[in-house]
Length: 313
Ligand code: BDR
Ligand code: CA
Image 1 (cartoon, rainbow, N blue to C red):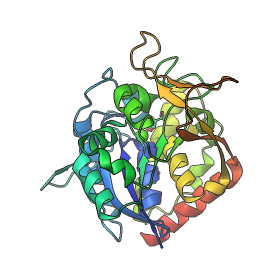
Image 2: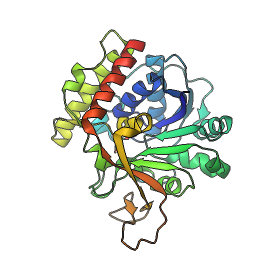
Image 3: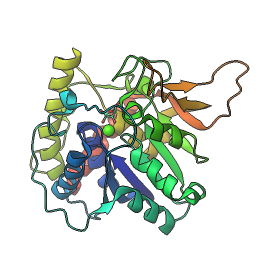
C-alpha cells in the first residue's frame, strides 16, 4: 500500500524536483502539500506550490496548505540560488487561490485522518510543523514519522558559517520539532554534499514533451548556473530530493541515532544544529541522522524516478 505523506516545502528548485518525483511515485500517496517561507518569502512560496501542482497536474491532487511568516529567525532568502521568484525566474502562472487553508490545519487534519500512518517530509524551515504540533500536542502520538531536510553535523553551514538554511530561517520552530517525542530522521548537509549531480543530469531528464520534463528542463539549468556563478562549483546538490529518496529508498542510506538540538540565540551560531556526541554524553538520543549515502545508486534511482514521472505526464 502506498505510504501517506505530507510534503512541507519552500519551493525552491530542489523542492520542485522533490515534488515532481514524489507526486508520480506510486509508492507514495501525497495527501497534502504545504508551503513554508524560506527560499523566497512565504507569499511567493504559497504561489509557487500552487503553480507547481497545477503545472504537474498529478493523478491524485493533494490538499494544499498555505504558510504564514515565521515568528522567529532572521529574515533571509536564497534568491541568489533559486531566482527572484524562487523558481528560476520562470514566473509560472498562478491559478486563483480559492478556499485557502492554513498549512498547520491541513497538517493537523491529515494526521488525525490516518493516525500513525502519515509521514511528514519537511523540505523547508520548520515553521508550519512546529505550529501544527503546538496547536495540538496530541499529534505527537499520532504522526507516523518526520523526515527533515536540514542541519549539519560536522560541516560548515550554507547560510552562515555555522548554520544550515532551513534551520536558520526559523530556529525556534526547529528546536520545537527536534524536541517532539516523535520518530524523526534528519538528512543533513554532510550527506547532501556527498551527493553531487553533474550537468549530465539534464540529459537524463524526461522529454520536453512531458509535463515533468518541460518543467525540470526549465528549472535545473538555472540551478546549475547559480551554483557556478554564486558558489563557484560545477555540480549541484539536491538536499530536498535526497530527503525524499531517504523516505522511499532507505536502503541506499545509513543512519545513526543521535541527540540533537538547535542553537536559538548565539550571535554567530544561531540556527546551528548541535549534537551531543561526547563519550559520556548526557543528552537523550532524539532522532536518527543520515550519515552516509550510496551516491551512485541514489543518482541512478533518481534518474529512474524522473523517467517514471515523465512517463506519467
Ligand atoms: C535547503 O535550503 C534551501 O535552499 C533548499 O531548498 C533546501 O531545502 C538546503 O540547505
Ligand atoms: Ca527547500
